[in-house]
Amino acid sequence: MASLSVAAILAENARRRPGKTALVEGDLRLTFAEVWERARARAGALAGLGVRPGDRVALMAPNTAEFPVAYYAAAAAGAVVVPVHLLLSAPEVEHVLKDSGAALLLVHPAQAETGRAAADALGVRTVVLGEEFDTLAADAEALPSYVTRAADDPAVIFYTSGTTGVPKGAVLSHFNLVMNATVNAFDANDIRPDDVALGALPLFHAFGQTVSLNSTWRAGATLVLLPRFDAAGAIDLMVKEGVNTFQGVPTMFVALAAAAADADALPELRVCISGGASLPVAVLERFEAAFGAHIYEGYGLSETSPTATVNQPVFGTRAGTIGHPLWGVDVEIARAEVEGRVELLPPGELGEVVIRGHNVFSGYLGRPEATAEALVDGWFRTGDLGTKDDEGFLRIVDRKKDVIIRGGYNVYPREVEEVLMRHPAVAQVAVIGLPDELHGEEVCAVVVPTADGRLDAAALTEWSKDHLGRHKYPRRVEFADALPLGPSMKVLKRELRTQYGDRQGR
Image (cartoon, rainbow, N blue to C red):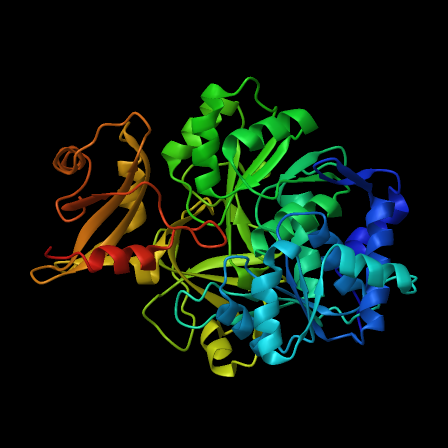
């Protein structure tokens, strides 16, 4: 039986680079040896609380040093980490704890009220990170090393955002996560031990956890944590700490490009990675012009550890695409309307993106029907529509469920967004379909104008007529101060559909 543990990522660095700075948060600086020592002490505390290998330990914390320490402590104890989104309400946290069968909740003081309310309702023990967990660790006997697990044993259960009903737990193995971190660090991206990465993506989310935390440490590089992202503060911190690696979602790149003009100095960025949602080409161009740095856009889902594809220097990069599959991963396009089997399409055809490889999850916890729908013929069906060209570059066209059908024609919101983002007065935009008696659905653009942008709806509609087909341009334009974002910084289109759908006919 092959054995493996996510905890080996940290343990090996403590052996190879004990004195190297691993983690920076504010004034706190910890070496790999110090982080591993803290993790082993807390793993001992977890064992003292009765946590056994295979038990689920929920972790609810922002991007402070407590998160990676607790994460690796749980992994070292052989437990399965259940990260909890910080924006959830107490009843939503309760669902995650109950559904995962969590034996314990580790919660940051800032989230303690919500977390404790959820845990108390279920009779789940809560330990507050910081003083309480530190005291338990000081009194416990530190584990000498990590508990060995089978490579296919669960390591982390990520709860999906629940865009289609109740959130489901995606079960990822030690093999899934260690391979994804390794391939991200050494094959897809050229991450080096002397790199310094900014940890601005939420660590409770798959992208932040694998690409910021685990991949950075897999390469032996330094992670600088930013508990709360704001663009001006992020630029200052990156300059101060010599950050040369940045992973972010499109909304972060939008904000950084806008803030660059007012910054005293800009960081010298060598590697920038975008994921989590499609990056409009106009945003990529604005950011690259401001920072003089390339963005490598990638793609993945919680169910794929998360990275499945990324623009990789070795294959050449192409703006507006998600690059090529990761080493050891297959990504193809299948006939979207065929259920129950995967029928692959030739290059250039539009269909559903399907993935297989070492990154694909074991299934949804306790949901065999949902697992059987998602894992078909050895492929994971993503629910995203895309194409693959003759050179193997993949492109995401849209979510299957976000496609607008106007008068019988398919309109892909992403295509409309790409065009509208080129208007000089548009800072951000989300395009949605709203019910329409005549056409079935109508194209609606929800626009956040630039700070000095003067826009009126009719003028934007007129402008878009010159750049979009007759069935595609937005007949309806709404203005907003900001777009609603989920915990992973994705625009919540379902909220926009609800909000603006309710205003129909007013």
